[in-house]
Image (cartoon, rainbow, N blue to C red):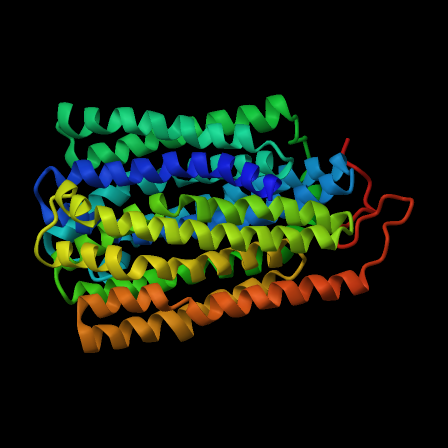
Length: 451
């Protein structure tokens, strides 16, 4: 449990500052007194989340290969996979950001944005999209640092960026009078800081990236894509479900969308430790599995689930106490205020099932079964969130949409955790001790190490 708590705490600190600044962004924008601004950030944020989901999938591949190589004492392979992973992440983000920028207005309209809200969303996303490759590189570099066990420096990359964002937000939004665009430009500068700090840690401190040839990069695409493809699909499930929920919520007006968007910024802050838990247990599981220590893998899963349950219940209690304060702080009214209070009082506890799914998916990705994570995530969205949100909206209006989204993970979170424990038992029975040549099962160690 101690190892899980240490890694989670370090990662959670970074996520708390990052998500916290997003929440502060929303707070400052609500002070401008226009409901359309909060709704616009909700639309633009949902679209950008598709790009972030792809980035997270690439990070998972990089982190899993580096962690398993480190666990097998193969720093040469860890360096090579790190270099190839960073290059691939950059190239993919450039292509995807360009496509998103070209069809930006059409994509936002597809999500349900219209009128002045659409114009605000386009203005906001037009600034953030060209900067996505910088964010992706920074996040990927931080994942590499975390994969070698240096959670502290990985944390400081996001902390530094978030602090810069927090300082620049009021300056750009109010002092310079840039409004919504000011919030976007503050995020651009913060992303650059994240990249610089993470690159210093991974290159100058750990000296992990090495120079590779184009042929070596092409060879490494196989192992990277074997993990990245299902991981990307897994992470795309969440924005697909989120976009459907947003589209469904848009029929109830900008106030309902604004309420959902405000909770969308508060929830990651409240549950930052759960998000951090899934990223923290991945390297622990990967390194122990690489060494054949499956009893430790199961112990990690048990500790993670215990932490998940206790933490969610604590947050639910706090949200119930602070519901009215949240409504007042964000100047919410009408439908927005009603949705915020409804979520705080009745829906917060449902996040325990998301936490179970996050932990299980982290284990699947690091135990060479990433396609399981894909199946469970898409099952949650296609068979859980989407039908529940649709029916909830038809029967109970905006409240029903929010409830459907919250409880969409119930069955799949429980099933995924059972599957994770069954998988560790099966892999333990099939495990073959590592040969004297230091070859690692699942890694291509026959190749000549990079120079």
